[in-house]
Amino acid sequence: MTYAPITADQLLADARSGLRRLTPREAYAEMARGLRLVDIRSDSQRTLDGVIPGSVHVPRNVLEWRLDPTCP
Image (cartoon, rainbow, N blue to C red; front, side):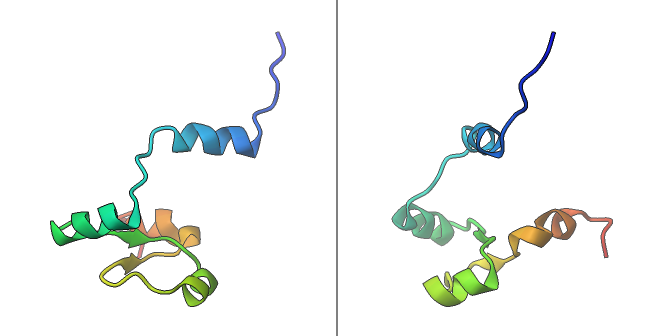
């Protein structure tokens, strides 16, 4: 039996299928209730689109290491 390779688009679609995306208004309301919003955009995206007040910035390319309690 042969398997077709999985494309990046397929992997992303599968990963995103389990996410609930919030609108900006919903995110703001959740933050008011104590939700911690993690902004994973790059510095250039944040410069272009603006900073989300009250968010924690952890760039996507370092997210796993920042969440690993054993990583310095």
